[in-house]
Image (cartoon, rainbow, N blue to C red; front, side):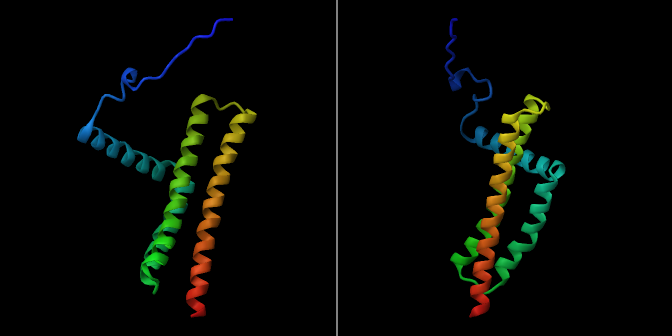
Length: 136
């Protein structure tokens, strides 16, 4: 059996031709499109965005120092980032096939586990810092 060798080169990719400000502008447009699509199509992302809309103002209003505020906000933003990555994994798997397959399930479960760990991290940060604040 002969094996065909294919090497990837960015020069052969028709989507990699832009450079400089054009590339940055198009990347920003694609990023915005991804956020808009996530808000419209992903209920979990909308739920986490609602959580974000509640927690970030609270983090800014409570009497925390800059480092604690950064930890609170960062832990919430981490949840959104991981949810977007999980949604991208799910979309890629669904693009390949809707057929049930063990590896597809495993990939989706890994993504889901990553979101759960991000949520647990966020909750731990918030509980720890809030308890410390209340303890005075």
